[in-house]
Amino acid sequence: MADPIYQFEIVKIVDLPDVTVPGLGVVDLAITNSHVAMTIAFGLVVLLMTLVTARAKVVPGRLQAAGETLFGMIDNLTQSIIGHDGRKYFPFVFTIFMLILGMNLLGMFLTFTATAQLAVTATFALLTFGLVLAIGFAKNGFKFFLLFWPTGAPLVMRPIVGFIEFIAFMLRPLTLALRLFGNMLGGHVALKVFAGFVVSLGALAAGGGLGLLGLPAAALSLGMVLGLTALEFLVAFLQAFVFAVLTCIYLNDVVNLGEGH
Amino acid sequence: MSSPLPPEVPTPVEASAGVGETYTSTTEPAHGPEEGGGLPQFEFQHWGGQIIYLLFLFVVLYLLMAKVFAPRLRRVFEEREATISGAIASARQVQAEAAGQAEAAKAEVEQARAQSRATAAAAKARVTEAANARAAEEEAVVAARIAEAEGQIAKTRDAAMTNVATIAADTASAMVERLTGTSVKPAEAAAVKGA
Image (tube, rainbow over all chains, first blue to last red; front, side, top):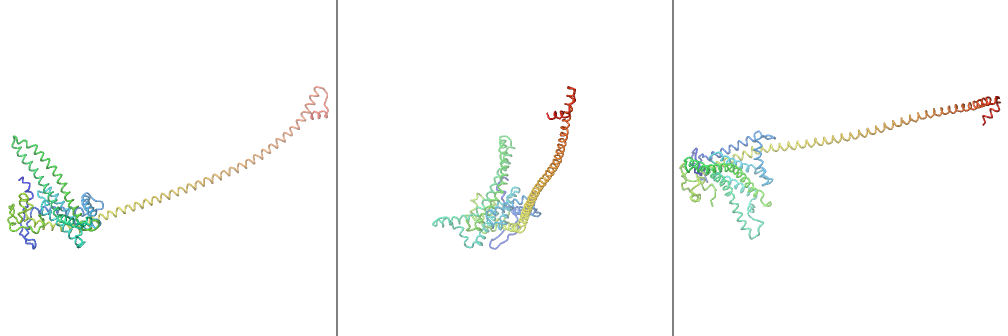
């Protein structure tokens, strides 16, 4: 019961037959708890955005003001980092931000956190990486490779530095995926571990005798759970924001390639 | 290098084994020991379904954001900006109008003041002139009367002076008559007058 890893277990809720997708192999289409969590997060985001924009007024109400704050935050982000073209990429960044934020926050209320699944974070990371590659080649053609050619370095060093730049570039999706995954995984494991301490130390104290010493430790653990919960809410928002910021920075690299890179 | 790329992952046959299975040796045995006994996240048979479903959700949400939500909010933003700038412009205009009116009022007041000052000055001049004229007129009348009175006084005095001579002669003759007992002849009385 107190296994802190158990919360990440994928459980099938409705089993559907496997489908063979050409090029991908066999895909299990079963509806799992991960699907449910993603769907709820998606539904909440759509609901929020619908409520915010359905009767949007010039003088906003409370909910609209909250929605506009999120909207404006990402809007400023895209425009300040990518520049004038930023508005074109806003829907992509905002979609990623809202989905990750929704899943992160939902994980604070459900027993399952979608963004603590590497498959989910990797998908987000590869979406960003894929878009960066697509825009890079579509906008710049083969000049895209100038991204790895450090004009500031001495000529002899350029191939080496360029190679390092290339490796760093290729590692971006990995770091994107692992940062979010690691934060959510670590936070929820820590929460579960301390919550488990409360239960097991409490049980020890219930046995009486020397076990009563477990009571202060249990109280301390409970305090830790409280503090960590607050911290996790912060992390949930922060990681979504960091993902959005990095997406903007990576997009800026290829959108404004060769302009004061 | 553990690439998180999906294509290599969806695992074969054991996927049908169902819920109970824990760490069956998947096609990627390298991960097993590396991750300290297997996080559920590395059970790759569950990856394909999640990834495809998430991509589907992402595309739907992206389309909603790009086609519905973002344009709606942008419209509101633009409307708000237009409202605010319109209000500011109209406020500026009203302010300028008010300033113009204040300027006009000030000029008007200034003009009225100047006019009233001029009127006052004119009235004062007229009054002074009239007063001076009347004063001069009256002075002339008074001077004429003074002159007339002086003439009369002189006449009366002259008359009195002639009478004085007669009275003196009479008095002298009366005195002489009392003292001497003789009457005075008119020639002698005239001599007294000359003394």
